[in-house]
Image 1 (cartoon, protein in one colour):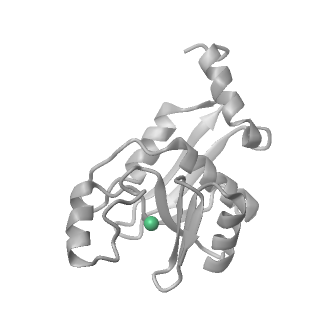
Image 2 (cartoon, protein in one colour; image 1 turned 180 degrees about the vertical axis):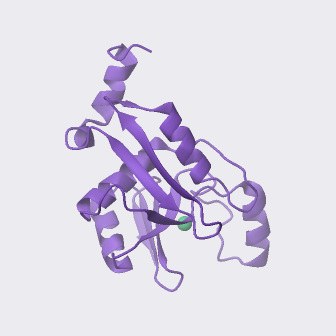
Length: 172
Ligand SMILES: [Zn+2]
């Protein structure tokens, strides 16, 4: 696609609110379950970068089964906004407790514990459970809530905050 084509213009307009301040957007994750680390630029020069999105989709795959899916790019944008508001460096790694969860894994976990929702934003590729080194969970929660980008769940005993791009709501 040409950089100046109509689709690029629409994409640029949609993301204008943060692109003005952040022409290049990147995310870095560490996965505590397998020790993997990722650092990918998923947006540059006014458009999403397929290679960067693919790397993040892989980073956020269901770590139990290896299943991947296309994650909502708006979720990545939301995480960038959270990180910016916290004034955390783009190079610092978010601890990724959970990204995508496949229906198969969810069924198995739901059978063990009904605290696992049978329908979750994780299965739709629209949620992450994260923490950030040096940032308290309550502050991470407050900043996520202030952005009103979707759902925010507070799990202090499990050591993470759930952030999704579903409807605006919160729970703990
Ligand atoms: Zn979650």
